[in-house]
Each structure stands twice: as C-alpha cells, then as structure tokens.
Image (cartoon, rainbow, N blue to C red; front, side, top):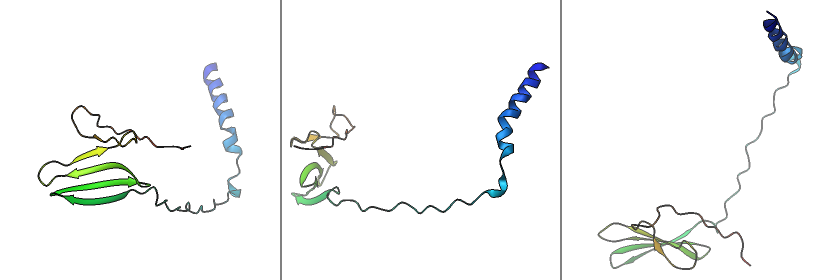
Length: 112
C-alpha cells in the first residue's frame, strides 16, 4: 500500500504546475507571415544546347559556361549520357556496364 500512496504523491507533485496555471489570461498567437521568396541565381540554372547531327540529337548541359553533361539520343537506338565527373573534360558513360549508377555531387566550393 505504501508504494501506491508514494506513486500517487509523486503524480500529484508532477501535475501540480498544470493545476496552477491560470487559463483566463491566454492571448492568441500572432499570425506569422510566410518566408520571403528569394529568386534563384540564373548562373546556377543549366544552359542546354540542343544540336542535330546525322540524325542524332545531342544535348549539351553547361553551368557557368562549363560543359558537364552530354545526352546523346541516336535516331535508332537507346539514348546514353556522358558525364564529366572530375571536371577535367574527360567524359565517361553514366549507364555503361561496370560503371556506377550513382553520380556523387562534386561541387567546387572555391577556387584560388
């Protein structure tokens, strides 16, 4: 019986602050305006150049004038993607057998 009474006393002490609150002086929370929309920088948006060559469609994707991805859609066949993963101008196929399907983001934080 002493365990039950000590548990009741402990619960009473834990709930005491809730009973002590005065609910008559509550104020409505002011309405918060939505965050301001900041326009994106156009330099971040990729520039896409589409060319037709011998029936193939070639899409060149550039950011800040630097070519980073080429999508080749042949007239007959399956399209394929070439990606410059290290930024040195060497393009590797993204969907070729033996190449990883995951393209890890490698952004340049700063150049000196």
